[in-house]
Length: 292
Image (cartoon, rainbow, N blue to C red):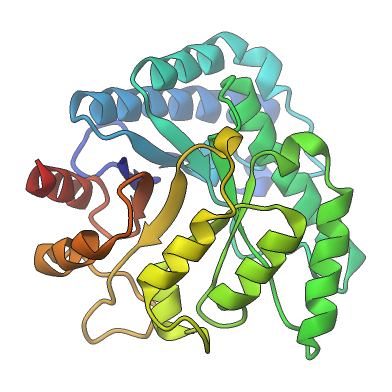
């Protein structure tokens, strides 16, 4: 089992991922930022390895405007050596990597421009993991998207667009239940039909529960069946609700008694847990130390 954290490394110097405004995204400026970002990722991997954390989600901003159609910036060629070295470091230290496109990457939009932008964004995320030479166990997480007034039609659009994706993207793509539109039952049904691994998110399920199979543990067991050997260990997302904040807000830190109670109910420990929490690596270390 791995326990991981996402995007930021709290309390570690020179690990901030930078970006810039589109208006200032010249070739020279982008090259400068990417060089800094890859150096930051290198330090993140060093920290992660030294602390025996074996899973990390890379920020989508690692290559600013990496999927922007109007920007042609040959980052794969310019930084090939650095990218391959980063991938080797991750593999040598058994660190599983992932990426998670944002809310505007929507495959099931009724608007073709939005869909084409989403495909371009998925291609960028896949290209980055490919440039690291990471295998298909290193995944890209995606939500199903919106409902647009007709949920069945929106689901069919997702299926149609998924089937058109390049095979290299399909090999990395996994889908996740969300806290507003698509519950675990919806996503599992899609995953089973299209042979897509399903990520179960505990907090999203608490906010947007499925009408059947009431317990999270039951859903985790059912989602496990969508993961094949080439996908690697099943992944789940674990987070806790922040006190006195809007529903879905992640807590500042993981409350260990609740996490331990959850951990003890898991049907198997042959899975990986991505923590989604404000203090990032700090909570990952807390959980790992508790389980020693």
